[in-house]
Image (cartoon, rainbow, N blue to C red; front, side):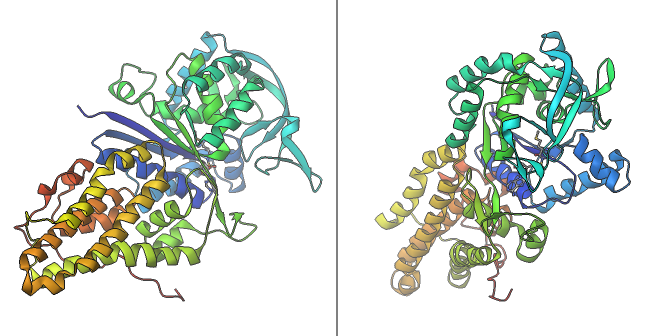
Length: 513
Ligand code: MSP
């Protein structure tokens, strides 16, 4: 029976247009989801929108719109982005849906019955933009204004009646959990931040607000709405039909294998979320992976700096595979990384057009011209042929391990390396010179190189699904044969059927484009 794998993106605030940061979280999660499917896992990949809270209410007010109508419109933009980014998500959750509402109420009730909630008064700093409470030592003065040191966003003083979650009571349990599960938070550098923060001792957390109404009302006290982060984090189980813990989906997919998030929301996922779950006596997710920031010209992208690269514009001009490939190649997952239009163009030309694209194009057009458009069959592979194929096949366990640890950059480096190696092999083997003198040798070379193109295409499939699907279709590999297991198996190649129509995979970008 296939094993299950559950992966999630953050759910996005539909407060404005989607930007590159959103695209990045989603693309990265999609790559892991697709890879696990190639390994034969039964995957559930979830994304969606986070629609309650003061931030959204304020944005809706600015536009003079009812918040629900405002969210209906903007959530659609995020839903359509999943298509534009070619995401393979199985579900799209909105926190304004009934299935989510039910689930949040149940979590709240569980925390009440475990004795983890009490009523008091909150006085302190709050950032609407981050939807986060900050301590005095987490804020600073800038041009006469109070801002959060970590995010730079404005904070305001809040004093209101509030329900509190006894987070302080969970510090030790959390520390123990991190010790027992050393890979719960990745990358390592991020883990250390969290561990230190928890070891200092945690303060109780305000989990309801009374100064606005846009949220899920607290059961039995409608003056309060539930804090948007307690609401939002619960989405990960709402989508599995929680509170029905006997439901097939819940049983198959909870606990989640990995929550992919940005580093700015690590505390919510690696401290608050596990504490809520511990208190509710529910299992904890297996991993939280916090990726870094996408920077533009070494600065955080922001409207005021005018350095925003709009994912939609880039996709329209250069293509979605191109953007997916470039983002994950350029930015080392887990660290901050700068992107630029100049580097995107170079990457398309060097890696995609000249390397993988060129390899497929020249091999397949050679076969079309010289072999009746059918992949030759051969049992006479020499040492260099076998070495080429075996290098890749033997590295599969290592590649799978890299992906299981979200080491996407090492994985890509290895796969791109195979593509360079295959180009070199084709050049050095010179099938064109042995065509007349030794057709058997030519057949062995072509047999080998097409098998290697198949293998590289399968490995690149999660990253550039459109282009690799085209190549695999050209060599008559059916969709159900696009699997890691078929890398080990050269019998998947069809030597009797003609190759499909050759298509240009990646256009080279001229300098002024
Ligand atoms: N709604 C919350 C998440 C709730 S999850 C239960 C939220 N939404 S967000 O829309 O503000 O951000 C979503 C994701 O985009 C976060 O993971 C954030 O890190 C990521 N990014 C936003 N800007 C970014 C960059 N410039 N670079 C990389 N990712 C960044 O937070």
